[in-house]
Image (cartoon, rainbow, N blue to C red; front, top):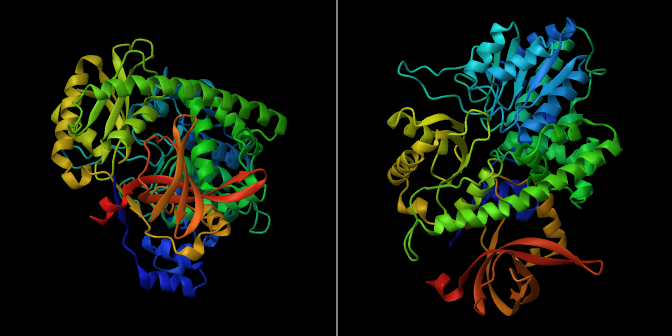
Length: 582
């Protein structure tokens, strides 16, 4: 691991500090590209306007007409946390705005596959729906939308995924929906291309409320308060690991503010309880590593209906039951993942000799893998090897036993969906389906074509990845000023909004290791001297001892012992002091 210090921006930091930002936060924000104090203003009035989002106003008119005609609206959701929160926001929001018939349907990962398919469209029509609205999917559902339209449904696609690549005529193929709302569709001027599925739905509801206000159904004083949906928007935004640009940071900050005040859906409160997390001190870490995985687990192993119902119910007792069920499913997911991870790592270790560099990209398959967990295992391989990684499992869908479903995770500098698009162009027919983003993507291949896909992906990776990109590096914020080695500073940092593209602070200092021991045979517990001050440290998942004088990359953290809160360091990486000096 090459530990480096990110570039500082002293002038911007000074400007932020002069505007009243905490000096340490000013330095950290400036190093992450914040140049103006206005960028840190989390007020709802500072959100990008819905009028900038292509299709939002058109969707608002269609939905307002549907509400006026008392039409049945059916939401078709995705089976991850973004999809679940987007579905809950859509149903709750539509009901707040006057819908009397707002239902939802979420595909089964194994049986139905991803997105709006023709069979899902038929099921929606069989329910008696008049309007079909996708959330967190649909931009690639050309056949599914066509089937829905043929059945007489009005179709509103709300999505944030990238549309397909341009064809030979230079045009991007889009589904022929009545309305498409997607910041990443061609021609959309919306400045935040990182808006996720739940964020898109929230913006559509803002536009719908404005349309209903213009029609005289209520005024600004009596209009329904959509800010009650912001905890769900924040949860989905963090859990989907989209870039936390200024607009997304505002959405997350507003959601966290309400969660900390206790103003959240009953299901979220119950999830905090089963995770043993304190909602009054909620952080983005809680969303990304506690609540999010439990909701995701339902879509991976069971039925995402459990997760969506947990987010929809207003009955605290029912919420507790559903949250407990989600926690149980997540424990099962961990067990399955652990076994799959061990099997996958054995396969990975066989791909190259000790001392050799791993392949430029890695593909792993075993007939016993569970398709609901392949993405998590791909992420683990990516983290270990610092290479783009795909993990495949056999499809469980009837009649598609010969197909393999894969999920991939990437490293900075390698756009995974673009790589899949190039593979598809070079090897027509190998990829049956694919889609995704820069850092995460999915695809389906016939088992007989897996080796062809693997070699094709490696060829793309060899061409696109240079030595600098393949080198593992950890960006830090340099040394922590001695006066900030305090509990209150750790609390201040934890309460800020951090996430993808706006990394939580990691500091780097030379320390003296006073003592070290293993905890639970897999974690290294440390007693350190940092800038002359004694402090504890913990390095989770690391067992190798450290030299006495070490350069540590760490996060400020707190823990409690016998009711007393203490400051400690969470170690991320280490270098011998003499190696760092070299």
